[in-house]
Structure formats: structure tokens, C-alpha cells
Length: 378
Ligand code: SF4
Ligand code: SF4
Image (cartoon, rainbow, N blue to C red):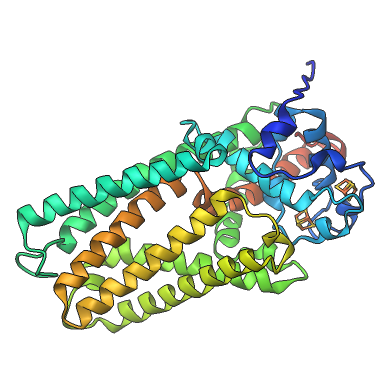
């Protein structure tokens, strides 16, 4: 089949944050120093080449951007300052948009003001909707129990409805990732037994970010794993135990201790990431896409308003607690709606999937007796 080159590809990736791609002259230094580059996944030089040559379909079916954890070694060693690490990051954003069937991801990544507009509209709709419900069914001076402004049973039902819808979108996008990187390539014949045998990799890489921990620089991994586990802990508490989290005055200590630890984890790691990006303390903080700022600021806002409304509730100020709860929900809804299926949080699923798929590709090609270095798709 003829391979089509698209000369607009570099310019397109630049809107996703790619930097100085055309400076690359393919010396291969970046691939030599990359701690994760190993046959058959040799990167980042190959991905740079696909991009420079405008090989859209090859780049689209490429798993390698997900196998990069942005340690920054390649960018530091590049003699041409072609920023291969940042280009791999921009490819992850671009791939997220390719997997997304709605086109929303593409819109958010390419236009920060559209993302801000989406946040404002969703925040306003959330605020108005919950305020109308709260005043119609209770009093803003009551936090919990009878006549509560935002009763936990109502918020719980809302969370599950929103979670189911967003989960469905994310699942469809994950299936599209599978189709684009694996399913549509007739050369990769993966049997159901292979899928089952390697399924444990999904859990391993989701919960431990194991590959990241193998990087020489452990700092970013520790930071990342605390952020990710704090977020997951909070998600489990909210989705599974909201009535206990919100109840009072009796404190359920195991729920609250986990909640406090997760909140502290989120606030500290997000504050560190924001400071790092302001000061450009690490290579991967040197270039920040608008969506990086928006994501971090929203996450910090949500964690801060969440703990503040809780403190007000505990201190016996139901009015302040309800106002802060409303402000908190006005951050939570846009953050989850825009980030879970279409942006940064979707990466939490795409990374372990890429690890899983990369092992399956090797298994399938080896089972066919083929040289994986020569025949790997992408
Ligand atoms: S990105 Fe830099 S280090 Fe890598 S091949 Fe190109 S010029 Fe060499
Ligand atoms: S940023 Fe690190 S992991 Fe990513 S391609 Fe460069 S050297 Fe490899």
C-alpha cells in the first residue's frame, strides 16, 4: 500500500506543543541515552522521523510516545536542541485527540480559550443547577441531615450518573486506541489466550507506574505516583463512601484519614508541579502547554475547596461549608468532564494500555516466528 506523506503534520503537532522538530538531523543521540528505548521500540528518533516525513498513519498507530516517561535525558543530550522529549509529550496529546471519537479532545488541545470557555460554561451550569436544587429542596444554612442544601444521597447519585457517562466515553476511546494501534493491523495476530495471559500488566502499570520507576531519576516518579494514588484514593472515597465522607458530626476515622492523606498528597504534588513549571526546574517543566497549566490549576482548586468546605463543616459553619461545596462542585464537574475522557486523566489509562499492547505485539510477532525489530507495526 502506498504511504502518504502529509507536509502539514509538523505544523499540526506544533499546536499540541511540539518544539523545533525540524532541527533534528537524526544523529541518534536521543535514542542512545533514552533509558526506555529497547528493541523493538526504538525511540524517540524514529518518532521524530515519522513526524518530519509527515507519516501521519504511522505516527497514529505508534505506541512509542506512551512508552516515554519524559525523563528529559534525550532533550538534554540533543546536539541540535530539537527537544525530542517535549515532542514525545506533544505526540501523546495528539494521540489522545486521535483516539477521541468526539473531536472534543482536539478542540481542547488546540485552543486553550475553547477549553476555558468550556470550563466557564460547565461551572456556571453546575453552580446554577445545584443552587436551584439546593434552594428548592433544603436550606443553604443546613449542611447535612434533614433539609440539607446538598444532601449526600443526591450528590452520590449525581456522581454515579456522571461517572457512568464519562466512563463510557473513556472506554470507547480506549477501544479506539486498541483498534488504531493493534486491531486494524492484520499482521498482528493476538489470540484471546495472549490477551488473558498479559492482562495483569494493566493493573501493574496502572497502580505502580513501574516503568517510570525504572528511570534513573526517581524524583519525578515518586511525585507522579503520589499524585496518581492520591487522585485514585479520592475517587474511590467519593464514588464509594460519599455519605461517610460528608456525614457529621461523628467522624469515621478510616475514611477521613484516607481523605486527609489524599488531599495532602494532591495539594503538595500539584503545588510542586506548578512551582516547578514556573521556575522550570526540570527539563520536563521547561515547556508548558496551556493545557498543563489549566489542568494543574483546576486540580489544586478542587482539592483546596474540597478540604475547605470540609473544615467549615467540622467547625460548625454550615453556610460557609455549603457555599464552598458549591464552589468545589463548580470545579469538579468541568475538571472531570473535560479531563477524564478527553485530556490528561485519560493518559492514566492509555499508558498501562500501551505497556499491555506493546507486550502483546511482541508476543504475537514472536509466535509467528518473525523478527520483531524488522516487522513491528507502526
Ligand atoms: S532529536 Fe536531537 S539527538 Fe535525537 S536524532 Fe534528532 S538531532 Fe539527534
Ligand atoms: S524523555 Fe526520557 S523516556 Fe522520553 S524519549 Fe526522551 S529519554 Fe526517552
